[in-house]
Image (cartoon, rainbow, N blue to C red):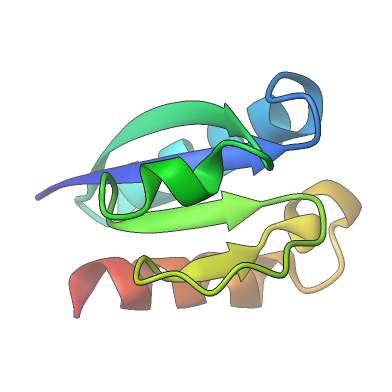
Length: 93
């Protein structure tokens, strides 16, 4: 199964790269091939509908059709396993 995920942070480079690596590797163990897209918070409204999921590491207040999850646990480690399971659930429904 192949899924596209947009990873977004304030700059589109730093923290989203950390989240990307963790999610791609975890999904791979679950049989999901992730096509990651790096982005920044200001750009994601224009990318609505281009991916199966958006993971952000900064606060957002956008209402979008594409599901958005807060990826902060991927950076802190607190609640990381639960978030990874939630991501897999969202991608496989």
